[in-house]
Image (tube, rainbow, N blue to C red; front, top):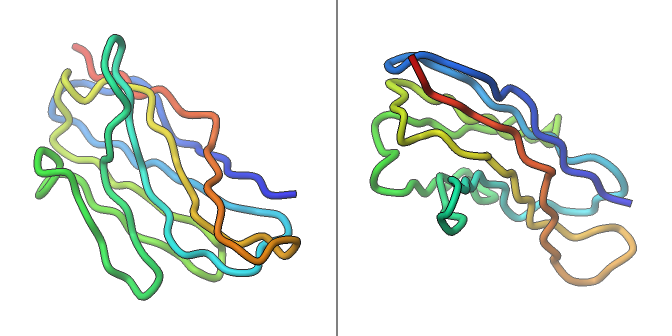
Length: 121
């Protein structure tokens, strides 16, 4: 069984910073990619950033320069450092892991339960 668990959300003032963590655990053979998505009220879920096996990173244009994604492969954990936060960044942030469980021969997507980030004065 595979689990993906996020942590680190909360309330922050505009201009502030926050660091999210996401850990994958369980019977995992290989992780291809892990990434962060967010969904604001009334809006579709959108990509924030992801990191692919080998270290390639991708960012949504509006997050470039403010957000940084990194990973600790040994811990099967990905981090999202968010700086210069704006009220428009308020959303539920979800982690997605694309990985191959030991019980399977193909890659599958696993989502975390989400963590709320609220940017407000």
